[in-house]
Length: 487
Ligand code: NAP
Image 1: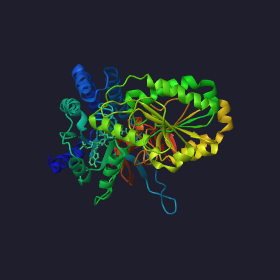
Image 2 (image 1 turned 90 degrees about the vertical axis):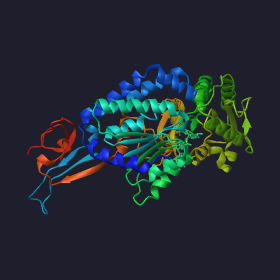
Image 3 (image 1 turned 45 degrees about the vertical axis):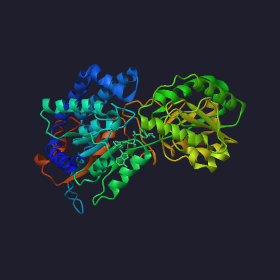
Image 4 (image 1 turned 60 degrees about the vertical axis):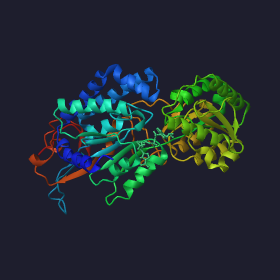
C-alpha cells in the first residue's frame, strides 16, 4: 500500500501555502484545470467510454458539466461573496464596552475526496467535491474509483499540469490509485486530514463516517449515499395525464441504466382505475427500453442480487416481463400494496439500477404513512394538478421533512448546477443534511467561520478591512452592503 503518511503530510504542508493564495490565483487555477480537461479531447472520452460503458453523448455532457463547475467556482472566487464577511464595529462607550469583531470563512485544511463510480468526470477526480474544495483553499487528495482508474489518471494529470502552469504549491492535489479499503481508511483516519467528501453506497459512506468519528480528533465526512427518491402520484394528474407521466417516468427510471442517486425507485399512489392504467402503461414503456451494460461488474452483480431479493419478497408482483440476469440489466417495475410495504422494510431499500416499485395504497392516509416510512431522501416528487393540490395541501408541508429537493410535476433525474440547487437531504441520503454537494454552496462544506476580535485594520484579512477593496457584499453592523467601514 502507498505510504499515506507522506501524502497527508505533504497535503498539510501545501495547505499552509495554498490557503494563503489570492482568490484570483485560485480562480485562474480552476479555469486552467477546465481548459486542460477540454484539451484532453477524445482521448479522455474514449478512455472513459471503455472503462464505464457510458455512451459518448452522456460523457460529452458530463465533461461539459465538470468544466462548467470548475469555472463556476472560479467565478464565485472572483465575486468573493462566498466568504460571508461580516463586521461589527466597536462601541467603546457601551457597558460593558463592545469590541470590534469581524468574521469570515476560512478553508478547513486538506480534504480527501472519494470519486463516484457513476460520474467518472463530474463527481470524480476533478468533479464537484474536488472543485469546491480547491476553490475553498483546501488541498485535495483524491482516492480514485477503481472502476475508472485510467480516466482518473488522465484527469489527475490535467490538474497537475495546471498546478505547474499557475505555480500552485506542490501537493495541492494528489491522486491515490490503491484499490483496497485500507488505503481509504488510512486517509480518513490520518491526523492531517480535515474533511472528507464521498459519493457512493450507503455502506461505504457510513463506514467512512464511522472511521472519522472514532479518530482522536473527529472530522466532518460529507457522504452522499443512496436514495430511492419517492414519487407521490395524485389521482387527478393520473386521470388527465397517465400516458405522458408513464413515458417520462420510464425515461427517468432507465436513464443511464438507472445508475443515478436521483433515480425514482419508489412510486406511491392510492388505488384507482387511473393508477392501474398507469401501472400498465409504465410497464409497457419499460419493456421497450434497450438494455445497455452497467458501469462495472460489481454494480451489475449488485443489481442482479438486489432486484432478485426485492422480487422474492412476499406480496411483490412483477409488472415487467424480463428479470435481470448476472449479465443483463433488464428494467423492472414491481408493485405491492400499502400494508405489505409497511410491514417489510426491505421493500424501501435502494436497488441501484433501472428498478422501481409502485406502492398501491388504500387511501391518502395510508399513502402518507408509506411516504413518511421511507427514510431521508435526496429528492421527493409530487405529481398533481391544481385540483389535487387543493385537496391535499398537507402533502406539500409534509414533503419538507422527507428530502433536500422537492419537485412538483417533474422527474428527479437531472440535477441542475446552480446557486439554488440542493443535492443532499436527511440521513441516510447524506451524513449531513445541512449541506449540498451540487452548486456553488457546496463550497460551504470546506470552510469554517473565524472571528477576528480587536484586530488593527492593517492586520485583518483584506476582505475584512475597512476599505472594501474587493467590493464584496458584507454585513456592517447588520446591514448588507458593499460600502467601506467609516473608520
Ligand atoms: P462504493 O462501494 O460505496 O465505493 C465508493 C468508494 O468508496 C470506492 O473508492 C471504495 O474504495 C470506497 N469505499 C467503500 N467502502 C469503503 C470502506 N469500508 N472503507 C474504505 N473505503 C471504502 O460505491 P461503488 O463502487 O461506486 O458502487 C457500489 C454501490 O454503491 C452501487 O451498487 C450503488 O448501490 C451505490 N452507489 C450509489 C451512488 C449514489 O449516487 N448514491 C453512486 C454510485 C454507487 P475502493 O476504491 O477501495 O473500492
